[in-house]
Length: 117
Image 1 (tube, one colour):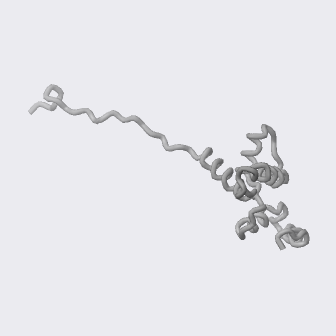
Image 2: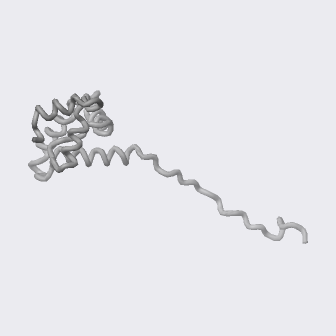
Image 3: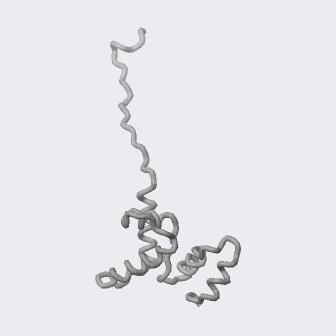
C-alpha cells in the first residue's frame, strides 16, 4: 500500500496535495523508515552541503543514497532517521540564541554620595 502508485496519484488529485509531501509525511509518521519530508529545512541543509539549489523531488533520492552509504558503519540508519536528524540540526542552527547582557551591579551609595541628613 505504501508504494502504491495508484494511491499516490489519487492523493495528488486532492486540492493542496499535488506535491505528495503530506502523503510521504503521513507514511513517515505511520512508521515507514524509507520516506523523507522534503521541506525547507531539508532543502536548506542539502543546498548548503551540496553548494547548489536542491529541488524538492531530489531530496528523497539524496537522503536514500546517503542512508545506503552510511549503513556499512551504521546499520540502523534510514532515510527517515536522517531526515529527523537534519531537521533537528537545522532548527537548532536557525533558532536565535537568547541575548545575554552584562549588567553592572547597582551602585552602592556611600557616605560621600548619600543625601544630606
